[in-house]
Image (cartoon, rainbow, N blue to C red; front, side, top):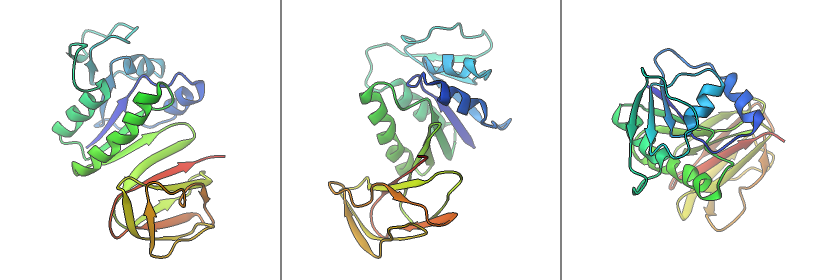
Length: 209
């Protein structure tokens, strides 16, 4: 099952327009992290549940929408609580929307949460109007789909045995360190790229110019 989690990080018009173009399936689980409800409402989406301390919520949640209210003094962000709910609901794919581009701390936390999703056995992705971000720990095919740039950043301290195809600057059994910039700002040379890693976890960032 797929879960879409709306955050409250981005007020960019292009991200709202991008979200309007997404085709949500009937059986998808729609979760809003606190003020993420306002973003969902902007595109006409009624969520299944709203979770958080409700400190950034501006709109009125309809009576029929489930909500879980947490105290403001808590150990997890609202986004983290939503990810917990998605995993506990059996979702094996979790996509974060409007979760990047606002406060720096929350934006970084959203990126880091992708690792927790991956280590929990699910697939995670962060989407914006101009980018998609996800983690891999095995050979993966990545379609160009209108993106031009592809960056590879180790999430683990070191990623070994990194080999790529379909990129202008290929790697062959390379060792990437998290403190290096070797994998930054590569570019698609074909309609599909292949990234393989033998040991470690890689963050893949696809972006448009």
